[in-house]
Amino acid sequence: MEVKIGVQNAARELTVETDESTDAIEKLVTEAIAGGGVLSLTDTKGQRTVVPADKLAYVHIGRSVVGQVGFRS
Image (cartoon, rainbow, N blue to C red; front, top):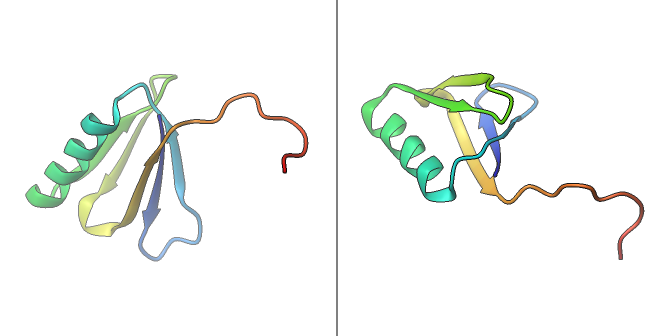
Protein backbone atom coordinates (compact mmCIF):
# COMPACT_ATOMS: atom_id res chain seq x y z
CA MET A 1 0.00 0.00 0.00
CA GLU A 2 1.32 3.44 -0.88
CA VAL A 3 0.73 6.21 1.66
CA LYS A 4 1.40 9.86 0.81
CA ILE A 5 1.59 12.20 3.80
CA GLY A 6 1.35 15.95 3.50
CA VAL A 7 3.08 17.83 6.31
CA GLN A 8 2.19 21.42 7.18
CA ASN A 9 4.84 23.98 6.18
CA ALA A 10 6.77 21.38 4.15
CA ALA A 11 7.22 21.74 0.40
CA ARG A 12 7.30 18.00 -0.30
CA GLU A 13 5.09 15.12 0.74
CA LEU A 14 6.33 11.93 2.37
CA THR A 15 5.70 8.66 0.52
CA VAL A 16 5.74 5.37 2.43
CA GLU A 17 5.30 1.94 0.82
CA THR A 18 3.87 -0.38 3.49
CA ASP A 19 2.37 -3.86 3.80
CA GLU A 20 -0.44 -2.61 6.07
CA SER A 21 -4.05 -2.69 4.85
CA THR A 22 -6.05 0.43 4.05
CA ASP A 23 -8.19 -0.08 7.15
CA ALA A 24 -5.15 -0.50 9.41
CA ILE A 25 -3.54 2.70 8.09
CA GLU A 26 -6.79 4.64 8.46
CA LYS A 27 -7.08 3.42 12.06
CA LEU A 28 -3.50 4.51 12.84
CA VAL A 29 -4.16 7.98 11.38
CA THR A 30 -7.45 8.37 13.25
CA GLU A 31 -5.91 7.28 16.56
CA ALA A 32 -2.92 9.61 16.11
CA ILE A 33 -5.16 12.61 15.42
CA ALA A 34 -7.63 11.79 18.21
CA GLY A 35 -4.87 11.21 20.75
CA GLY A 36 -2.76 14.17 19.68
CA GLY A 37 0.27 11.91 19.38
CA VAL A 38 2.30 10.81 16.39
CA LEU A 39 1.57 8.86 13.23
CA SER A 40 4.10 6.06 12.94
CA LEU A 41 4.32 3.87 9.82
CA THR A 42 6.82 1.12 9.02
CA ASP A 43 7.68 0.65 5.35
CA THR A 44 8.37 -2.58 3.46
CA LYS A 45 12.10 -2.30 4.24
CA GLY A 46 11.54 -1.97 7.99
CA GLN A 47 12.22 1.77 8.15
CA ARG A 48 9.91 3.80 10.37
CA THR A 49 8.42 7.21 9.53
CA VAL A 50 7.07 9.26 12.44
CA VAL A 51 5.05 12.48 11.96
CA PRO A 52 3.47 14.55 14.74
CA ALA A 53 -0.32 14.30 14.31
CA ASP A 54 -0.81 18.06 14.73
CA LYS A 55 1.43 18.68 11.67
CA LEU A 56 -0.54 16.42 9.29
CA ALA A 57 -2.05 18.27 6.33
CA TYR A 58 -3.43 15.15 4.58
CA VAL A 59 -2.91 11.40 4.26
CA HIS A 60 -3.57 9.76 0.89
CA ILE A 61 -3.90 5.97 1.01
CA GLY A 62 -3.79 4.11 -2.31
CA ARG A 63 -2.61 1.04 -4.08
CA SER A 64 1.01 1.03 -5.13
CA VAL A 65 1.75 0.91 -8.83
CA VAL A 66 4.74 -1.27 -9.58
CA GLY A 67 6.59 -1.80 -12.81
CA GLN A 68 5.05 0.81 -15.07
CA VAL A 69 7.50 1.94 -17.71
CA GLY A 70 6.86 3.98 -20.82
CA PHE A 71 3.97 6.07 -22.03
CA ARG A 72 0.34 5.45 -21.20
CA SER A 73 -2.73 6.89 -22.81
